Image (cartoon, rainbow, N blue to C red; front, top):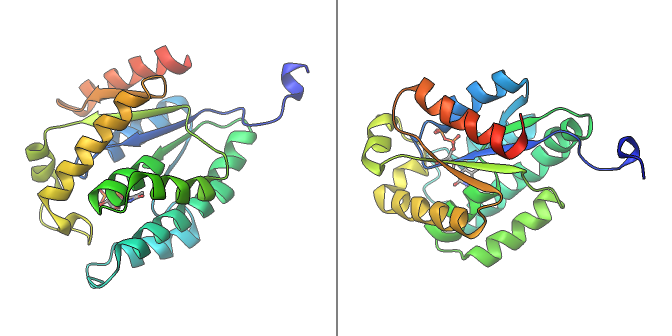
Length: 208
Ligand code: TYD
């Protein structure tokens, strides 16, 4: 089949992952601007997702069960893939997302203790076959990340440093298990320092 008639996505799907306060939102924005990609995020990348985001992160809902949290994150993602990510990729645009499935594996699967397998299965349903071309893990020291967060914490950030450490450890494990898809980038230094490291990885892996 000629290349131009082949089905499936034509744009590249790049995801930034990292703990809270890792600087990934800034780096996602900088990269998206440089390569002219659609910039988006989870939770909250669609109108439906914005409603889910405000519900799932509201510190007032201390009673929310871990399973409910996982289902809401997956519901946000299902809508995001369906409405924003997949259509953009098919139309040839690149997409940069601030968080995706690995966030649920790290926060809900391990951080909340629901298990990687069950959260992975739930998310397979949500993403309907889509997977990122590149996942960039921004590594920062847990202490620096906590400092960057300040004091206005959402419901999940309130869970504290034990959860943050489990999340970091899980990310490192996921990256080590799938080095073809993941790249670990040193998140220390200025925005420009980190952006240059990201650019090198994106050029090497995807030729962008
Ligand atoms: P994020 O928007 O990255 O946080 P902020 O912009 O405040 O730094 O993510 C919001 C929170 O949601 C964060 O604590 C991580 C959490 N989260 C999960 O627990 N599971 C998920 O699947 C996703 C996407 C986010």
